[in-house]
Amino acid sequence: METGAIPVGEFPGGFDLQATVESGQTYLWERADGEAYGGNDCYGGEAWYHTVIDGEVIRVRQTDGCLEWESTTDAVPYLTRLFRLEDDLDEIMEVTPADALVDAAYTAYAGMRLVQDPFFPCLVTFICSAQMRVRRIFRMQRALAQEYGDAVAVNGETYYAYPTPERLATAPEAELRDLKIGYRAPYVKQTAQLVASGELTVNDIPTEYEAARDALTEYVGVGEKVADCVCLFSLGHLEAVPLDTWIRRAIHDYYPDCDKETYSATSRAIREQFGSFAGYAQTYVFHYLRHNDSVD
DNA sequence: ATCCAGGATGTAT
DNA sequence: ATACATCATGGA
Image (cartoon, rainbow, N blue to C red):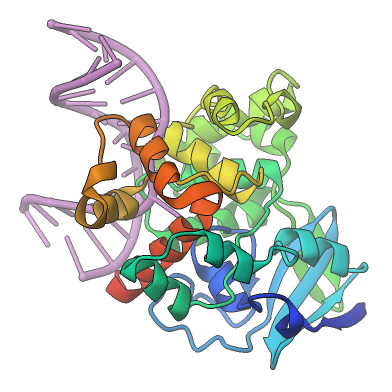
């Protein structure tokens, strides 16, 4: 295992590993000390997290201003991309209008960054997220990885990669349902088939934001909200604002002028208010509201 | 027991 | 285009 430490405290806006990987924007990192995701506290200030990407294991933890890592490869380029370490948080917060709610969220989770997840895992995790609590989404992804992901053994530990499109495309629907995916099982299978067959891959998704969101809804189980999650958490469209139940409620209560009849109209209104980094504000507010309510 | 969770789909209007 | 029932599962 190679090891290293990235002095993230020196980056504009800093970095908060726990908030970044436990805020419900990515479901691809597992905390080594067990299942505390989505909870109100979490005692995980210096916990290790791990993921598998491109067949490589990456473990990270945060200790006083440093992002420590150990990996089967040089993790720095991966971490820089996956955690968007080059985003200038100070600049982003400066150009994003901060009212009382957004400002409170920024303050509470200073250093939280958006992630940039790999496309297919992000797509499937958010298909699974429909009508599901955050903690259960983590469990579903872990079950999928253990059942269908390639195993990587390092230092006596076994890690599981996220399943490939080919593997999920050929999995019997009944098996997927056994993993407690519920009615999303056929969505996952059919979407995996679209990707595995080459019929609709990430290369077919337009680069422009709204066009990308529309194209993503051609996958099965992907509506406007899930498409926005993929736009924001994988494709780097930082203006995307997924309108889930929490954010809809916040818009209704705090920004009634943006509360329009249709998804796309509300989306446009909220983006006009918060600008090209509206997705950052969305993710902070989502985490802030859900965390303070501490439902799961 | 009843309601709800980071919603989407199929069908009827 | 819009309205509605339906879809699993677990936790409050």
